[in-house]
Image 1 (tube, rainbow, N blue to C red):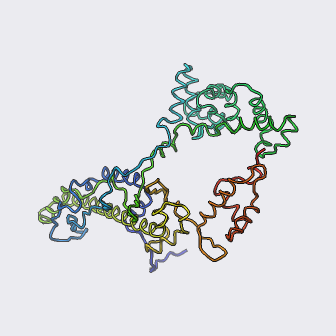
Image 2: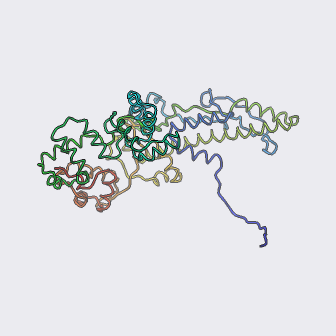
Length: 481
């Protein structure tokens, strides 16, 4: 087979280093950006925190010539334009004290709490290690989802310790006696039974234990008539047992912080929207983000090379090339942060413009239909860019903190042809279910009829979709006795 060479001309689109930096930074929230900047400062000696005020005159002198990379010559990186401060100043009456941090969980994680309690049991070294492995395998809700044989295999592989599943289960029982009650369960039924075991024995508690032990599927499906017949109890006795079960915590691990809870311990808003005296103002939260500039020493050394390039050795030129690359990287990063802030600012301005009535009144019924395309058309950004801005970002208003995705919703129409937000339909749907007769809950067909009578053009399958989005079960599972 003969080989031959041929030329081919084609167009390809490649992202510049600056564009890639901007895309990555836009996806990050304010806390992640702060960490990203700290990491970049550590990795790049040409980047540093600026001590000057925004618009300062530091590093304002520029080399006279702009030289090519082939000649290992630095362009004009020391001018003000190339060392921008990316802070976007908002309303002057805003300051750091406006930033609200909301705590949701204890600082101590579930694992830390269990480790402390295990330490008080005075187990031998082997059982202590087994307990640590089991605790390490609990999920954020306090459940042990892995089977004991798999954890036993881990111990054999990582610690050369051969432990039978029976020995593992013996230690698991010790963990299940710890606080919070129900921790270490392998499924929901075991979790609830562990909690009931700590309750004082009463007829209702004993009936609850029997239901969970022998009629759990019937209970889950709310087949109450079948439970009454098979257990030979009255409706009042069943009601008392159900009251005991529903008072239990199906997620005992949530009482303490865990991996996810620790990460969500504090929410720092990315935007601050203030309604004051009938006007709405917007500010980016940059309170913990430093101003950046190119290192002065790098700029002066590169300027010195520009003036003495003829007399420099090959090694000196190689060192200058390294410095130029670092300065390039610093410049791209500074510009990327500046572009990120501009992108976030323009996107938030578009959202506030579209949802102005809500931000003025903070009344959810004032939310208008809004999708990514609407914001993209107002800003001129691509829909994917708006999506990146909207993910994992929060906005602080006068009354609370909202995820940015809260303001997006589909459009629906009324009988009169008026566009309304799907959020309004969901609110009416939830209100109808909250006020339903618990003995005869509303079916999806009945809910559809209620919404149609109120003038909303909506199909049954759409009602079912919205009900599921609200985490509301079907009528049969909402039934109470």
